[in-house]
Length: 179
Image 1: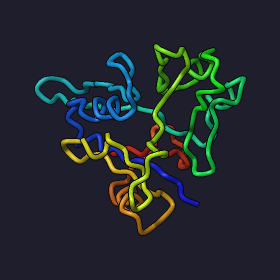
Image 2: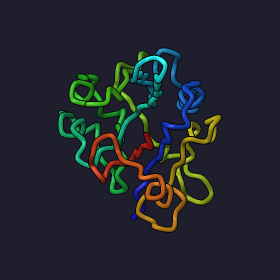
Image 3: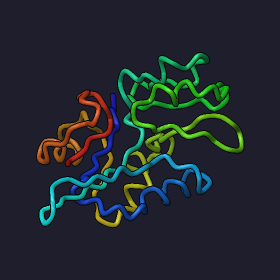
């Protein structure tokens, strides 16, 4: 079983929004819809101020609260750990939006349904990994995607080498960060 995931090295993120724009284009989103949002923070005091740009998207939680809250079963977790939305079942009630601790859900303005990062699982490359445009478009190369459970994969090695952790604190989450 493949467990796809993403590593985001926030230390290298410059907040250029290229990942967000490429994701919007790949998923045919209008400018007001985005699967990636940015949290900016500042710490310290002058002259030792530190800033951080943290791109946030669906964490693809193993025990996804959005899937539990969905009354129609439109939101579900695949065997590979990707949280998906069946647009045909979504009634736009927004319960998933209310319970998502990451604000990772957006309303499709034309359909009224709710959508989110799909980890591009429907668009696999020749080697079988998700073809996430946010990864390939990143100017600093701070993103990578792959099989988290394959100890020989580039992402699994990087998670260990960089001591990456999920924001959720759940080691079964699919998005890992270096901060």
